[in-house]
Image (tube, rainbow, N blue to C red; front, top):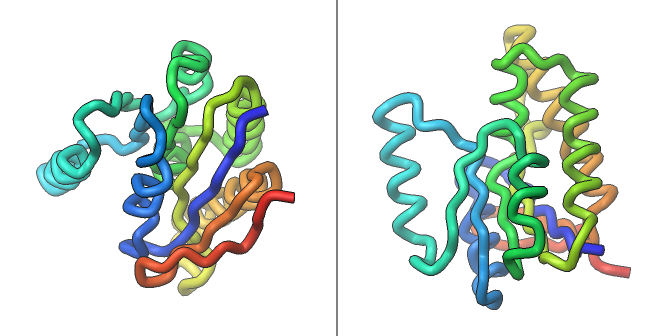
Length: 174
């Protein structure tokens, strides 16, 4: 069974940086990016993120079908980082998927992640600490993302919550 670590936190809390730090002790690392560069600003963010990753890491860009990718790369890597689940949820919602379908896909993802020996690091935004979104799409996104985080945290062997670059361990291995 794979060891799954979930890293949660708000925007700019240091989630991705901490994921890179945890993965730094592994030789063969795959970085799975769910972000889509649909505008100049996002393309620049993607470029900057790529620059800080070690050159020997393999990057995969997959905005929606993570299970298919994970089956393909199997145990070719010592560690796989998936950054981030919140963008995955956003991509799925904007593609017309409803909550039930998204939660089913996340359960399938967790099953795929639990096969093999690869260390898994998942990054996700904690979206439930702010104001209630003003529109239905925003509330739907927040609700689904919160449920996804709960599903993943339940299955993860470790969960960290990032605050101002500091990692607070909220669940540790038994």
